[in-house]
Image 1 (cartoon, protein in one colour):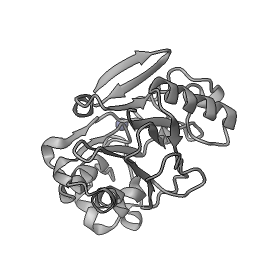
Image 2 (spheres, helix red, strand yellow; image 1 turned 180 degrees about the vertical axis):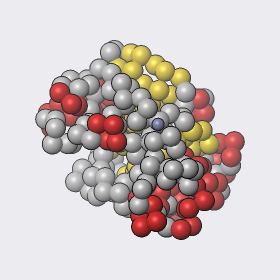
Image 3 (cartoon, rainbow, N blue to C red; image 1 turned 90 degrees about the vertical axis):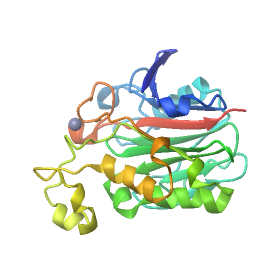
Length: 252
Ligand SMILES: [Zn+2]
């Protein structure tokens, strides 16, 4: 990944997405931003530990950085529901969904996480972007596969053209599931590493492959959030904390 520092903000970009000048994307670290206390920095998640006005300001900073028109942000509930933003100013506000897809220019798709994965999708042929929130529940529900299918159905995408990038999240080093026999279906038990740890990065990779995305189009950041709490909010590290933002937008 490539790190960019601009206007007090600091964010990571994927090499595979940086090839396309018609989109902006980034995984924002907690650097910069107006939140304080346990959420200090660029918190973009509505949480009890932060003021909504701070969250709004932080989201505004990202929008301004990308020169976007509006933020698309849904209420994430660990579902496999996908919000399709087909019209201008479809912001997803108040809608429960864990992925968004759009072909609208200037619409900044924002995913908020602290250990869960954000997965960015881009179809450079149909000019459609997607952004997914996939925690372990999302992994088990295969929201990644569902989102690729939605891009095919709603926008005529061919999975062979889709670029997919898996963001910083809980790595196999820290993804301990003591009760995995109760929580995680048996079909995923071969992703069990050792000492009740799971490799959710590989689950996402394989779900993308199963959806028809070519291996050479997939990039994983391989950065663990719990191992890097100075850069990212981590629920497992801090419990009461903020959410960092992963954003993608088609430029005007
Ligand atoms: Zn780790």
